[in-house]
Image 1 (cartoon, rainbow, N blue to C red):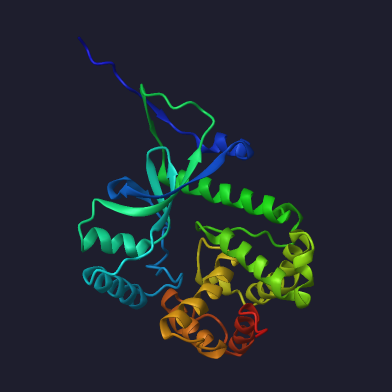
Image 2 (image 1 turned 90 degrees about the vertical axis):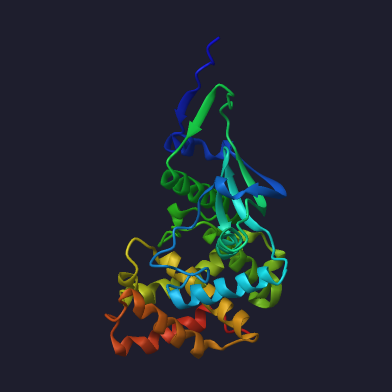
Length: 290
């Protein structure tokens, strides 16, 4: 008796993107997943650290801290992944995953699993394959669609579209909008639909930052990235530096540290006369309303 031959099917994400509203993301909770089935993650640019700033030194120090913790029995939070068919893409927890595999030779790791439910039927007689780069673009598109539905702020009506190249960035932008909603106008925005806070945040916080970045040609130091990517990096940088120090490191320190690290990706073309203006940008992005 001959074994029934399996048919290989290449998943076409471009066609699936035409009907994003039909897709569902199911939170399957925390479960142990096979590390060998993790096929994709944030493609770090020039050795980007989890802090979203390009620096091998910082990457190494974070990795070493997690490694020491694991060797001393410290329990770390689960990583977060998307599940696409039978494989996983890392959203958050790259250092934890690397340490678990390299130090503990882990075959499994705890992860919060967000599974993508497709409309087509999964057949046991078929094997499904896909290009991981295409899958990543698809997942970002899915996040963009979710962001648009939550904020009622489609890119088609924005002077400068909010486009990103990394997983999780739309979630961070949404968190900023929620924070703006709670704090702006002495909390009055929290009583209104989120669309008011979304466009208020965009006008008061994002657009001024974009205008300075565009005027100073800051994006030239980051090929294949977007202004929204850079905006998210700056915000995250201050957070991680403060976490590392155990206290708020302050706006000026963050700005100087940012530029020091930025030089590693040939950011030297920024005119010295413009640096002071960008320091002010950092302060505004950090929400100096404490």
